[in-house]
Image 1 (cartoon, helix red, strand yellow):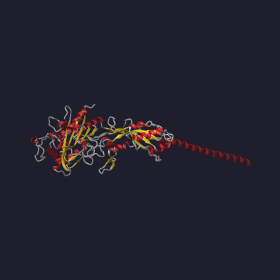
Image 2 (image 1 turned 180 degrees about the vertical axis):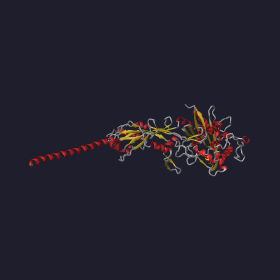
Image 3 (image 1 turned 60 degrees about the vertical axis):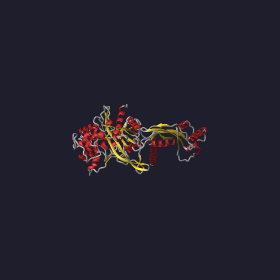
Image 4 (image 1 turned 90 degrees about the vertical axis):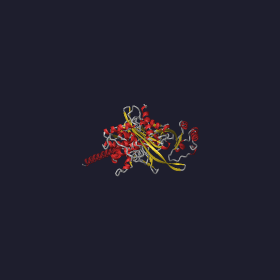
Length: 576
C-alpha cells in the first residue's frame, strides 16, 4: 500500500515538473516572439524615424532650389534663378579633427578665404559646441579654388540654385510670396483664402531639392550629391512665357519711355486662360491689379460698352433708335455732326458722352450696376491678396441725374485692367462671362496632372445683344467709320474694341511750390481673332502727363493705348 502510494506520488511529481517545464518553455517562446516582433517592428515598420536620426548624424543636407516649380503652360520655368557659392565650416569638427591634417591644405583654405574676404578668418574661430555652422558666401573663382580641398575635416563647399526676386510686382513673384507689407508698413501673412496661400497650402508638404553630403566619424565630408524629391506638387500657370516676355519687351521700348506705367492683360477668350499679364515697371505696384488700397482706376469710355449692352439687353433702348445731342449736357463736348442724330452704335464709335448720359438715364443705374457686377467688374478676379476690386462711386439706391451721367461715361466708377478684360471677352463669347484664371493645373514631378482648374462661366447677355455690341465695337476701330480706336485697326483681322480716356489732376512741386498738373489715363479693351482662336486684350496707360503731350491724340487713349494694342497683336502674328 505504501509502495503504491509512493509510485503515485512520484508520478504526480514528474507530471508537475513537466508542466512547469512547458510553462517556462512557453514563457521563453513568448518572450522570444515579442523580442522578434519588436526587432522586426523597429527594422521594417518604424525604421524611418530611426534611420532619419542615424542619417542626421552622418549626413548633411543643403537646400538646392525652391520647394516647387512654377512653370508656364508649356512647362518653361517662370522663376529666375542664379547660382550662389558657399564655403561651410563646422567649427567643432574643424578644431577637433584636423590635428593631423596637412598644413598645406589648412593654409590653402585659410588664405583663399581670407583673400576673398578679410572677415573670413579661420584662425579666429572657436568650437562652441552648439553645432552652428559658419556659412561663407563666395564667388565662383573662390569656389573653384576650394572645391578640390578634400582632406580638411569639418569643411565643404557647395553651390545653390536660388530664386532671384527681381521685381516684386511681377506676377510670378506675387504668386510665390506668402508675405506682404500692409498699409501700416508691417510685414503680414497673406489671408488664407488668397490665391497665394492656396498655392502655399497645395505645396507646403513638398520637399526641397537637396545637396547631400556624407559625413565620416572623424569629420571627413564627401562630395555632395543632388537628391531630388519624388512626390512634390508643382504649379503650372496659364501664362505663355514666350508671349509674356514679348509683351514685356514691347512695353519697355523707347517709344514708351514717357509713360511711367503700362499694364497689359491678354486672355484666351473661350477658356479664360490668361496668356500674358505684363507691365512696364515691375518695381512699382502691379498696374493690372490696381494700386493697393484703392478700387482701381476710372475706366472712362470703355465703360460705355457695359451701358450699351445693358440698354439693348433689357430692351430699354433699340439699336436703330436715334438720339440728338442736348445742349445742357456736357457743354464742353463739341456738337458732333450738328447735333446728330446718333444711334447707340454711332455714339459708341465716336464716344459721345452726351448721348451716353441720355442712355444712362434711360437704362437706370441699377441695371447698369447689375450688368457690371455679373461680369466681375466689382470684385476680385484672381483673388490675389493685393488685388483691388472695382466700385461704383454713385449711391445706386438714391441716384441723381448728374451722377448717373458721370457713371454712364465711366467717370464715377472704378475698375482694374484685370476686371476690364471681361468687357470685350463677354461680347466675343456671345454673351457668356468666362472668369479669367491664371492657374492651369497642379502637376507632380513627372508632369502628370494632380488637379486641373477650369473657369467659371455665366450667361450674361442674349446672344443677339452680344452680336450687336460686337459690331458696334468693330466700328470703333474701322477707319472708314471714323472711330476713336482706328489706330488699333489691322487689315484683314476681325478686331473690335473701345477706347477710354479719363482726366484728373495730380500735384507736383515746382520751384518749391505745389502745382496742379492735368493728367489722364488711356485704356483700350478689345478682341481679335488669330489663327482661328479668339483673344481678349486690355491695355492700360497710367498717368499721361498732358502738359507734355504734343497734340490732342497724345492726351487720349486713341493715341496711346490703342497703338500699343495694335503693336502687341502684330507681334503675336509673327511669333512661331
